[in-house]
Each structure stands twice: as C-alpha cells, then as structure tokens.
Length: 223
Image 1 (cartoon, rainbow, N blue to C red):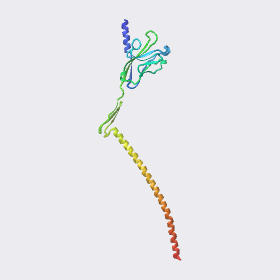
Image 2 (image 1 turned 90 degrees about the vertical axis):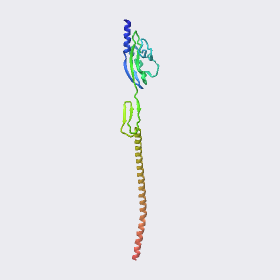
Image 3 (image 1 turned 180 degrees about the horizontal axis):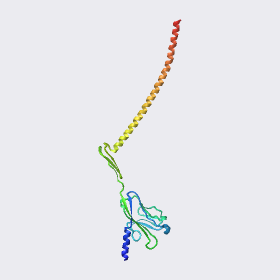
Image 4 (image 1 turned 135 degrees about the vertical axis):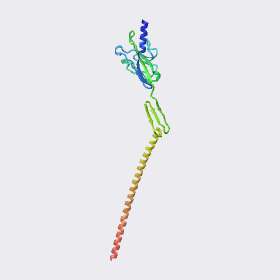
C-alpha cells in the first residue's frame, strides 16, 4: 500500500508542470515564490529535470535566502529574495534550454517543501534573409514574418536605390546651376546699368558744350 501511494505521488509530481513558452535569443522567467513573512528567508534550489525527493540532483542555481550560487551567468534570481521571490530568469535562450525545470523551497517541517515544475518550450529565432534577384525577375526580402516582393521591375532594390540617389543628385545639381546662373546674370545686369549710367553722365556735358557752340555761332552770324 505504501509503495503504491509513493508511486502515485511520484507520477503526479512528474506530470504536474506549468507550460512556459520562450523565444530563442530572448529571456524567460519561471515564477516561484513562497511566504517570506510567515517563514522568513528560506533556502531554495532550481533543478534541471524532475525534482528528486531531497534537494536538487541536477542543480543549476540555488540560494540560502541571502546569497546565490549558480552554474552559469545565464541563470539569474532577479526577484526580491527578502520577499520570498525565487523566480528564475534564463537569459539568451537557446533551443537546448527547452525541457523540464523544478523549483524547490525548503520549508521547515516534515514533507513541507514546496515543489513547482515547469515545462519550457523554446521557439526558433526569426530568420532574416535577403534574396537578390536578377534583372527582369521578382525580388523578395524576408524579415521574420514580413515579406516584401518587388514585381514587374527591371531593376533590383539596390539598383532602384542607386537610381533614386542619382536623380536626387541631378536635381540638386540643376538647382545649384540655376542659382549660380541667375546670380551671374544679376551681377552682369548691375554692371551694364552702372556702365550705362557713367556713359550717360559723360555724354551730357558734351551735348551741353555743342549747344553752347551752336548758340555762339548763331550770334556771330547775326552780327
């Protein structure tokens, strides 16, 4: 009877697990807490795989309520230990991190330990690829779940970018040349106006002199 009950308890412990999903390259937190106000700071450990009856036989991180011991810096206890938060965070997930984890909190008393199991699945990281097509073919760019297709074009996206840059540079050059030409024409007009004014100023005394001579000749003729 005792052996049967023990087997039943072990079977229940093995199947009892919360399902958690993570993504490769990111972080995931497996939540494990106890009542620190009631029990004070307690020792806790995290196990890779099912928890044994005593301790953690495949321990990856543990705490005595004050300090933390770990086998890798990718495993962190980032919660408030003084508040009973011994949740484990796994940094930079990989597909090999998928599997079962167990959290055990050693509560004083016979068979009082708290045990929690987690079944972690890790999704693959988004694949980023760029396919460069030839002239006259479709070009598809894939970034994760986003797909952009260039259809009915004789140029690739790179060539289109270069052509756009050339058009912008040509427009800038045209505007610059137009401004410079307008400035040159404006300066030339000012110089011509100034020259004409000087010429008019020089012509006026000569005209007056000729008028005076004509008047003098008329007076001599009259005498």
